[in-house]
Amino acid sequence: MKRSKGGSRFKVSADGKGIVSHAGTALLRELAASTGLVQGWTEALIDTYRLPPLHAPGQVLADIAVSIADGGDALRHLRTLRDQPRLFGLVASDPTAWRVVDKVDDTKLGLLRAARTSAREKAWAAGAGPDLSEPMWLHFDATLLTAHSDKENAAPTWKKGYGFHPLLCYLDRPDISGGEALAGLLRPGNAGSNTAADHVKVLDLAIAALPGNARPRPGQTDRPKMMASADSAGATHTFAAALRARGIGYSLGFSVDHNLQHAILATPEHAWLPAYNADGQPRRGAWVAELTGLLNLDNWPTGSRVIVRRERPHPGAQLTFTDIDGHRFTAFLTDTTGGQVPDLEHEHRGHARVEDRIRTGKDTGMRNLPFHAYTANACWLELALTAADLITWSQALCFTATLARTEPATFRYQALHVAAVLVRTARGRHLRLDQDWPWTTHLTTAFQRLRAAPWPAT
Image (cartoon, rainbow, N blue to C red; front, side):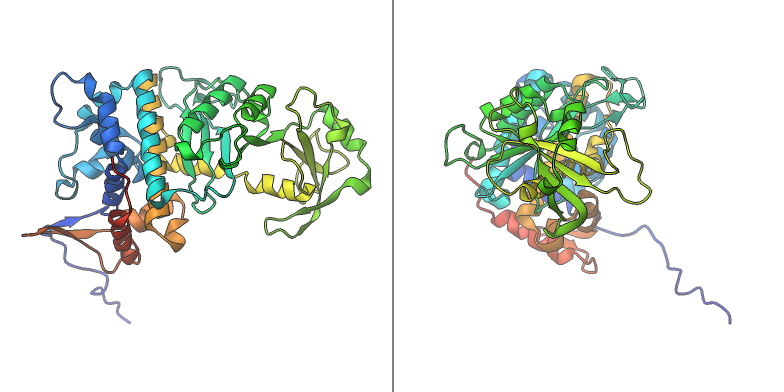
């Protein structure tokens, strides 16, 4: 049978008119303006200009953040917007964008962070915020970023690599896969994992990044309950004390050291209670117990408790020297009062999502720090966190069902990368989204919700 080639070939010509791609990215650009982020960043940098700039610095930085949200990981990817002037208008060139980033020193970075806090407050007030009647969880963790060329303050890492070791804090948003980026501190690659001073600094940056009505207030019962989680690198006396002083509870990974091993061996078998799966059902081969009374916790804040999970490793798993009697043990330190031990352990594990936040963050600009100067890379990190915020706010405010929960990489494909035809009429411009794109209706509704949101007055 002779194969027909007619169905697989089509005529190609270069005469399409008014066609634009990545049309959904305009939603994030409009969101950046609606939250006041563009204006706030412009006000933070405008005093660095002698004459009125052709490109407002806040718009330049916002465009970089939008390009990062769209999948860019270098300054040159700003051309995603610049190459479509019909849709995005006049967008700064790479040299112009670089000069704006180069103006951001430590002082200006603080002003950019303050402007992002103001934008978050407006986004939450418009409907993109979490439920403040539920406990809010702050997740802390560090990650390694490889530098493939010589960059200022890059250093060897503990994994035999070379680059940076930023410490990050995310607000857990179970309803949104990407989480909400609160704060990040760029550090050299040889920065310690359990540096308490850095954890406290990021904690204060994260609190400052929250709207005023969501910040913790020690001793005030009308404030939202807030918890902090981290792996064992965050379980230091200084960090735990700082959390207590700021009115934040904690659930921190706890190292299984020699003293804890002895406490485990001294724990009677009847003290071990069945652990839960993620669905709340008992997990076969896993148990939990509280070992607080068998440990000296005098150096920790009053009320600290240590809870240990014992579990049979899966077939083929290699045990380590901290594993006892053929079981694998993990522990955490918490100051939560009351509650059943299995429930506390289930809650701790359920909020151990910061690795997913960092993974999606690396899909949103954090995989690469593109500049040589350290301050410029610190600005890029702030822009990457902003990109994560823009995606989070748009999902919470403008989308429902799957698109409100999907991870950034999938969200970009489904919502941002749709093609459209831009039509100019006597009444203005009309963006006609591809009617055959499966998520066109969702994106159309998203624009309507964004423009109908009750934005607070500037």
